[in-house]
Length: 237
Image (cartoon, rainbow, N blue to C red; front, side, top):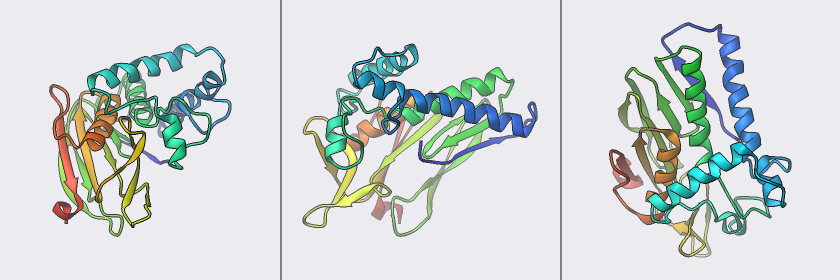
């Protein structure tokens, strides 16, 4: 998925090499299902007219549900607009990048529990999930010129995801910051000063989609029981 993953645990149940292999296997499977960049992925084959696989339908159905929950601020159907903005290959009507990493994180957490782990923290880029014990997680300042922790949050049986424009962006004609995140209402990239929004929820896929929705809409509230943390770059510094 073009990013690194990290697993922390205070338990030793499976040998480290075997555990690493289990995590890699889960991530490889779901990347093959959801990738916009692999020409033979389940998603790309579906967009070429092939029947959707059971696993792909599972993700698409969840994405559609979250689209409704967010009032359309998250929308998996913006693939063509993401391509026009230069952040995805051609031929993508559906783009699962705003839910895919979170969904994969949830599947890794499921596998860890199947293996007997309860005390763990797993992170794939900005999507993070904690097991049954408390873990502190640092949030990064949304400033591309520095690497700085802006604050810390504690997760226990929770997940978080962050959406922002300080890592993936281009400059517009007037020097404005043009995000890789698309506003479904306009089909255009979001233009906003450097900032990030983090959502804490019960699962990573939900947090992932709502973080995108909040960044797109500018909302400071998400679904029931979720926490939203907005970080403008000036406030973070």
